[in-house]
Length: 291
Image (cartoon, rainbow, N blue to C red; front, side, top):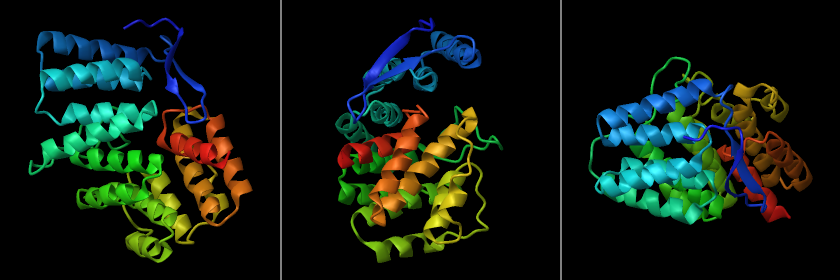
């Protein structure tokens, strides 16, 4: 992989801005080394798993362009495998190619039907180093997201209903329910939305999806909107949390009819520059609609 610090074009945002990735060979040295190890593993043994890890490592470096090429090779070389479709679909969302993402996830859903749940190893492990999600979960979750970002909320709802069936721990339950709730709110089905999140309790064991958990506690009135945004967006590891919290909060104000406040929060999310995060993409989608 070419690792100079030049900017590489990735796609266009929903607001028409160019999206660039800059790989820094100093600050991202560890990730670059992991990519080299993945490439070496594939050279030694040409397995689907090794090829997918190359694509995942490229994506973690922000090189969605390279990752999509790698996953496309995996799809061509392993035509009955659903895993590379799950990963390519995810990266299509990152670069705002929603129709392509939906095609990949729908094909993955057909290929994985009736197969046992497959736990997905984490590339960026959580604090306890426990993989929490499955490939099946990720297919339905990201399919729901792609429909949601297109504004096709009925289809998003159907995908999240499938996703709930494979959300088998508290972390996955709150992640799915948060988007499910927001989808129902978009459809103006408030009673159903409140009912859906009524199963979320304050004593749930959350390992990594704290941002979604706190958003739901806010919807329930258990924490205030101002408590939600105490995250320091200047610290790198907390930017994702800020972006996730920010979209939920902005969307909350949008549902209440406070468009000015919503726009201000979505704008703050965009100021983080974390353009591949789902909360960022969703904030961008809302701002594009509001303009």
